[in-house]
Image (tube, rainbow, N blue to C red; front, side, top):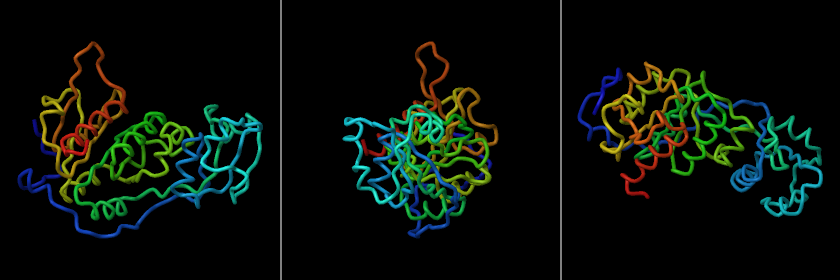
Amino acid sequence: MSRRGSGRRSGKRSDQQKSFAKRDGKSRSARSERYFVCGINAFNQLYETDPDRLIEVFLLENLGRERMQRLAIDPNHLVVPVQQVDEDHLFRLAGTDSHQGIVAAIKPPAILDDNGALELLEGIENPLILVLDSCQDPRNFGACLRTAEAAGVDLVVIPRSRSPELTPTVSKVASGAAEVQKIARVSNLARFLRELQDAGVWLVGTDGEAEGSLYEQSLTGPTALVMGAEGEGMRRLTAEHCDLLVKLPLLGTVESLNLSVATGIGLYEILRQRGTT
C-alpha cells in the first residue's frame, strides 16, 4: 500500500535507490553548556570513544569495589578533576537516583542542523534514517537511540520543538548510545522530509490504520523510518509527506506497542531485507 506525500516525487521506486555523492558534512549546531551523563555504561562508552569530551567526574563516596572494577578506567588515572560526593549531590546532577554512583560533566554532543544532516547523508550510499515525530518522553527517546545505534542507523532526526533534550535520563536509558549516535534537530520537520525525498530517500511512516503491513514492502533502498508519538501517532502533516504508510500486525488484545519496541521491529525488518542480519 503506497501513499504519495506532498513532496511530489517523480519516477519509479528504483529511481530512489541512487547513491549519495561523496562529500564531507561538517555544518553542525551544538550548545555550549556542560552536559551530564550518568551510569557506568554511559561513562565507559564515552571514555572509550571520545574521552576528550570529559570535563569533570563525580563519584559516589565509597563506590564499592564491584562498581569500580566495572569502570573503563581507574578514576585516579583520569586527567580531569574527580570529586567524591554523596547521594544527594549525584541526584541533583543526574536528576535521577539510577546513576550507579557516577556522573560525568562533559562537553555537549554535536547536534546536526538541517544542512549538516543533509551533508552527512550525501556521503552515505544507502542510508538508514530514523525520524521521531513528537517523541517527548525522555525514556522512550533514550531507548530509541539505543536501538538505533545498535541497528547501525546513520542518522536520527527529531524536530526542534516537541522533542526532548539530551538529559542524564536519556543518556542513562540509551546506555552510551546517546554519545555516539548521529542526531539532527531540524527546524521544520515537514520541509526536511521533502529534502530527504529530493535526495532519494524513501519515507516509510508507521500508522495503525494503514492498509499494508511492514512485512509486505520492499525496504532495501535509502529509507527513513518515520515514527510518531505513543498514542497520538504521527502528526497529520508528517504522515502526508510519507511515501508509504505501514502497520505492525497486532494479533493480541493490545491496541499499540511501546514506541521503542515498534522502532526496533521496524529497523530490524529493514536490516533483514538488506541482508545484514
